[in-house]
Picture 1: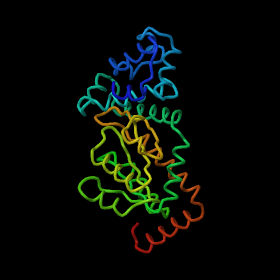
Picture 2: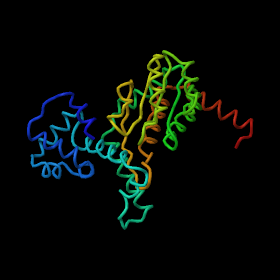
Picture 3: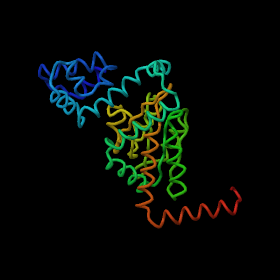
Picture 4: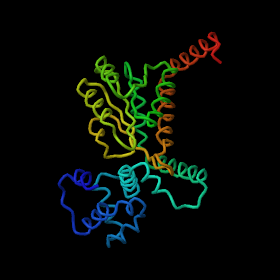
Length: 277
């Protein structure tokens, strides 16, 4: 927790009151990840305005967005079993709890998401000659939706296989005018980080969907969309990330115009001829 806070402050000196807020973030990340502005102010023995000011000094619009970052980092520090333990102890029905958590996640996404960055991702896909989408394990799911739907819409968007030589072989054929879209949720695989480094070296554009504003990939990205991801089970929820992908696809439909409609109609014609459905 301390490293990213120090990096965000970039050597800036804080007053005593602000230092007390930062101390709570560093020493009590679990408490801070749940606390309201008033709760954190009380724990740090400061006023609410100081908490808001510290959040802004760290590069956030206010305490709610900083708290989401702290929560994401705290959960990422836990193992899968630790994440399950974190959500244990509730008498709520697991299905009801999961639905309630995703409802809250979507509410937070709607309030906090940078809509211009979502539009910028769609514009980057629209302009790109080819787009490669990467994610790890279950966190590749948003990329599956993006690549499949955008492909039907006539865009050259492909889901990459993370690991081994496959991704690097694909990136070797890409360059300026192409795009890499990365889903960076929970833990960041080394292979994903290396792919972004190679993309930057080859002047490939980079768009990142992540649940951490402090993701190591952010500094290399042209577009960044930050999503909440807390679930109630072993792994984070993909609901917000999928919602962002749906928004990107909606924007692509709008900016693609008649070309998109023609592509969808042609795809459906071929499906009928091949009797796929």
